[in-house]
Amino acid sequence: MNRKLKLWELNRPTVEEFKEKEKFPLVVVLDNIRSLANVGTFFRTADAFNVSKIILGGITAQPPHREIQKTALGATESIDWEHHENLVDLLKNYQSDGYKVYAVEQAEKTQLLQELDIKSEEKHVLVFGNEVDGVQQEIIDIADVVLEIPQFGTKHSLNVSVCAGVVLWEFVRELGK
Image (cartoon, rainbow, N blue to C red; front, side, top):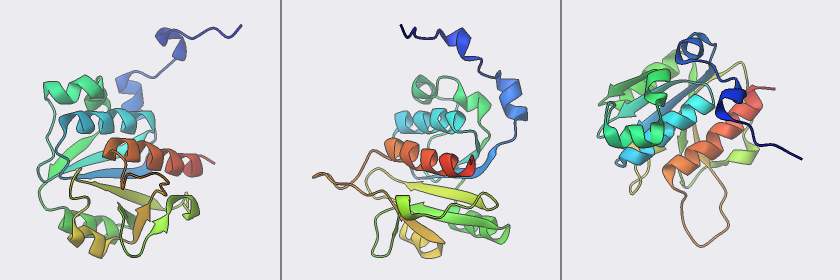
């Protein structure tokens, strides 16, 4: 028999314990995400993968908002976040502070996720773009890496929050070694 665990048996940290915990050197940037459900899902996924911070850029909605809370399930309280209008200048500042910037996008020159050499001694910024237009070209132009998830079906893209789960898992899997 394999009994399903109850939530209280999972021994998850409290919000206060989580905030004190050392985070993976990962910053997630949302570039003009329009869906509040996607924003909430990013918060919940960032909490699950122990991300340092979320940057909400441009038109991306900010907590508190009922529609964000529906999918975040309280993760807006555990994950540090901030809002910035100009992501290009912000990303350049992160680069000057030693972060490697990855634009998750399909472009002429990309690196496939499974071929990426993720170094645990490096700090990483992952930029996820608008549901229709993707990552801004100005961000692609300054990114250190344009990162692509291989796909094999008829659709040209994944939902942005699903994409985040795939990419973040790969980074955390490598950083946790």
